[in-house]
Image (cartoon, rainbow, N blue to C red; front, top):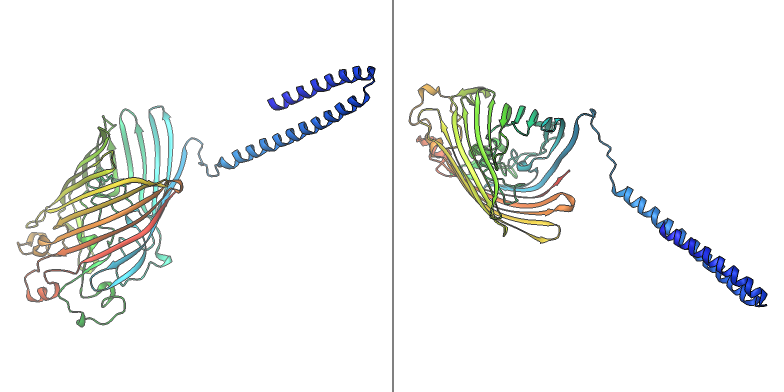
Length: 475
């Protein structure tokens, strides 16, 4: 606009000045000079018009560009008093599973970061009080937590939404947060703290879902005794040589737990928060969490306790039989140093109320390194090692009052080792993580003591090797 004013003013001055000159020239009989000056004025006028046209085009392009870069919000809340947020991600991968007798490629939804959609509503009652609700549903096709070697993929008709969170909450800056409904209990993931940046594949002590549905092969069953089934052992997942699955043998004590409950969280006190919850069947939990920074080093830690008065296990004819429950203790800590190195781990125990049952224990150690090698985003590496003992909640149908010291011989002696390595490349501009990981699973267990059982089970099992390659895209 300033250019237009300046150019117009210049033109007027030029025209006025030239007219005066022309008049003088006329009286001086210099007609040729007047004609030359008029030609120059005409040329100057043409240039001004061209500049004005070009400036208008530039202004139009800038306006269009700004409009294109500003997204129009097409999704709005049905209630103008609440803010609606839609988020989630899709996490898919290609998995290789080797149970020691057969190997197979699968196409899976990575259960550690299962595909999901989240609807969140939030309304501000006062400057200090927010009221809101959350609906978070998972949509998994061929989950890495359930698929086994020799098993077909999920059919389209069997893929449905499964609930993760369905809750309402009241959050006050001074008095804390109260949550009601299906959601995370107080001890949810207190043993899964992780600052390595590889959480899309492995998060703290939550290691059982990487190959959760793959069943261990009993080491003493001869392959020649099995009917030849291409790509699988006899009878598929019900083969006589198959035992428990990884997801049942490795129990993430005080790991992910989402049930119908009421939960209270205190406000943040210098990085420290406390939580308590009560869930169906009188399950009570308490936890403390910390997040802070010391000397440019990020530090997170958590401790938790859960009282589970009742638990169930598969009984005769597929029925659920009530057991006496257990008490769970555990926690984790993780540090991320400014140079990109991170270290941490977890430890937990499950004290069974059944007589003659040994306490189940689990511990993990993890280390990682993250650095921005590329402009896309951080590259994260991590390795982990974990051990678990007596974690399986026995399927025996014996009356608990009749349990003897030999009833849990196998369960008490069971030991599982898991070690893995993970790589995640972040692509920040596309809200995407590209990942690859590998885990090895080893199970050992003493037989019950009978000859037939020794022949069936043996003292060891084939190892399970699993690898997953894929990507997660957030929205």
